[in-house]
Image (cartoon, rainbow, N blue to C red):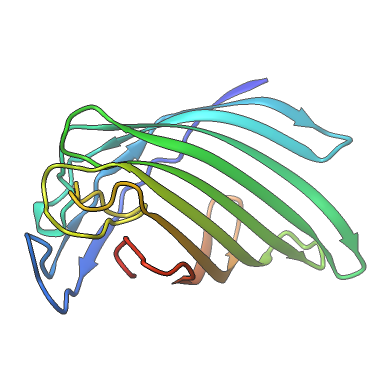
Length: 203
């Protein structure tokens, strides 16, 4: 068993909004900060799998120009399970599934449940190049109270939208990840919404 730090997300965000509305404008600035602990409770050496749970604190301390300052805080407990499988002559697969829930601490931010699935292929088992596909489902459970708009920002923005509760989004992403070292990596993916009646910001 081990207690390890959760990744800290510190990003710079650019937005180019074709039809500005309700404070959703073109701009740029720092994102909110996501940080928290993660506890690995299972590490199967022979079974080649690992289980962990943790909690992420979404701190809206970013720029108002890109809507990264909504409300006070969201607390996001989550669970993840990863499995290595399917070893072939030219590589093997890694699968990860992660459910979680975003709880707000005020009446401004939007609450939602999410379920993410990730599958990548370790090309030739070199642990360098990983083509990947991801499926992400989001179910908005409680409206925010900041902007009267009919969409949300998925995992990049929390607009505090007043018009999304009861709606779901299903997105598929395809891309790759390249490891230069254990500390430096680069990835690129394209994402599309595959569920009618999308209620999130298309990116």
